Length: 183
Image (tube, rainbow, N blue to C red; front, side, top):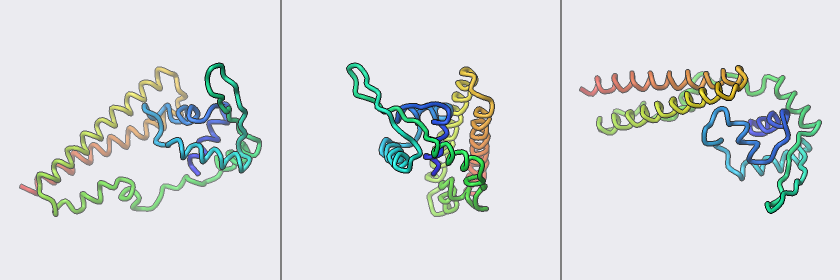
């Protein structure tokens, strides 16, 4: 349901075209676009149209294929506002959801079965990736400031930055502890 609600939220602000809509939803958070493929998007749009949540209008273009402009319907608006006002998708999750969300922790739990050099290399790679991800988030934040994105949307990105900083700190501490134990 998350993709459907993101689409409806975008359409609450303005009608738009297929993949362009998805890019606009995520533009503040992802520099390379969202991790949703065309198949997911267009299957979701078809279902939403069948359910009466959206409608499409064909727009002719000179020398280009026609595009379908997507609008939210009254039913879609009503459903979106019901979801937005509900408590659905607001719970923090299970007590140990962090363990399932960051699957690398599962591997860390069993590093004692690997040669030290392999586990150390894995930790180094994860740390490099985390730092690259942080850099990307910080660049996105600068871009948001430059484009004068609303402060509440920028604050959402701040959460991601804080999470990435926590991950980096944890990886550094775990790596140091692991190397200490292996000496």
